[in-house]
Length: 259
Ligand SMILES: Nc1ncnc2c1ncn2[C@@H]1O[C@H](COP(=O)(O)OP(=O)(O)OP(=O)(O)O)[C@@H](O)[C@H]1O
Ligand SMILES: [Mg+2]
Image 1 (cartoon, rainbow, N blue to C red):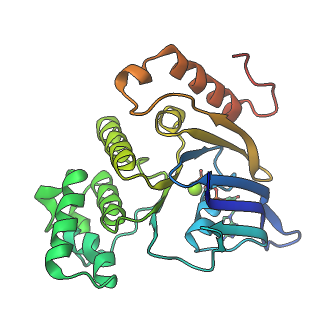
Image 2 (cartoon, helix red, strand yellow; image 1 turned 180 degrees about the vertical axis):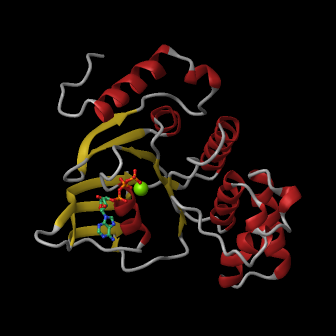
């Protein structure tokens, strides 16, 4: 399998008074082309820092981050990023926000409209296409940010707790839509979440990180077939994997639960 994203012995320190703070201490991870990987771990273990480096918004103190075999030197249109804190332009409407990247890419008005219509419909905001962000709920703002990333149709999606602010029903709907899009036109996804069920439901591998210093604790294979369905979500095997990941996240240092 070809590697799409590679972290090679990535160390990230932040200057602090006294000693430097080590946010990531030697993280190595390969994400294959068209793979769906989720990342879980305690707050502050460096998940966002890792994702931001793949996005080209931050760089390692030592080690390397590669996308398509080349060192990441900055953001690029082939990598769509959804931030932990939804970042919308407050003076633009939902549609204008969604079309922002398309405008930058130089797409013609009718093509922009077609893409934004589709992306806005996918996240259920059609009736709010002309609304300004300040008139939307937190979950709706987040759905707008998701539509903006989808509209550009990037080969790599870097998603930092994208569904965290959403209600349970919308969350499940967007999980299924994301999987549907991914399976139809496979792209590479790195997806951070706090939700162990979500991590297992979406991924073919779950990366469990540990804190202080931030590092990879375990990688759990999710040997469940796609498409993922309600039946799979309720299956004993799903429950077993979820428990394994749960244990790895919340009982770090202890031996993994027997399978
Ligand atoms: N710019 C910065 N300057 C100093 N320290 C930072 C900076 N950015 C992150 N950190 C520290 O690095 C560590 C990792 O932060 P990061 O945001 O990557 O964690 P996270 O795993 O995404 O946490 P959460 O689950 O809460 O989002 C934290 O201890 C944080 O305080
Ligand atoms: Mg984070």
